[in-house]
Image (cartoon, rainbow, N blue to C red; front, side, top):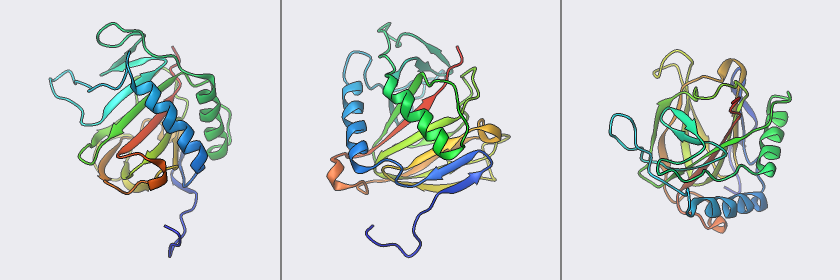
Length: 211
């Protein structure tokens, strides 16, 4: 929006969990989108994730550095293809995000999970608990606006806080909030910036493996 009644500001959602609107400039959003489109292509490209119970996730995913299988990591995809490498510049971006939000240095990032949501995709409440490291998780949004539900460490149910994440927004959670449950109950189709040229939503999530 060009003007808002209540301008969006940096907000601590919970201890160690910080939302920064418009952290990525339009140029950086375009550069990140270009990279995501390259990563989404074969080999080891965008895939539908199948759960151990036989279901499928509605958000599709591509991984860098380490390939995530519910609920473990490996260096190859489900068909044995080597996972795409994790670029140094993405580590720099993740470390800068942590410095700008939590003000504390962190180990080098070496995992990216990139989820693509169309208008019908959702993500159930879950914890990012498959890493050995407890370094903060960095989340970057591109494209359509979503409702990001940030909960507690004990249960998938209330209490939780719903945060609107728009294209260019940053969300970091670490410390006491590192293992908080979170999910995406809704994506607002067609709400992304037209100049970005993206239909749907991309979420670039950076993690430190500790492996």
